[in-house]
Length: 173
Image: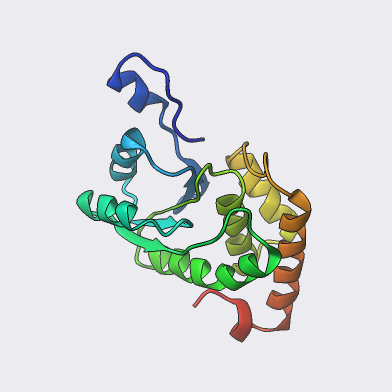
């Protein structure tokens, strides 16, 4: 579920760093801090997808030998912004999975944007919308604990419609 501060030693802090694995190749959560970067390496994550598109984080990922993809998704996020980003992020996740890698998808707090993008990816690979929501919330209890849940549901309903219309407009490439 992410990293919890407040431990008295670095060793205790590292033990508290936990990734929320949605699938064996996809974890979600908050922006990485020092303990999480180390954990990403230990967990053999090969790609970090940052929904803030922070150039400094790209440098940090490179310093740890990790791939990095960034997409600037505003917070709060509107329905159209979700729909515009779902195919790109889904394509990056798919590329990481196909190459045998593991992906860490995050936003700032890990409760609004990254869970929603993970749900959209699961839908693109065949999970029904309700099941995708259930899977992500089951793996990451903080999912949708802040923000406008109505916007998130609308975005996923519209994504579901796009997926039904055809692969050329919505499936990860």
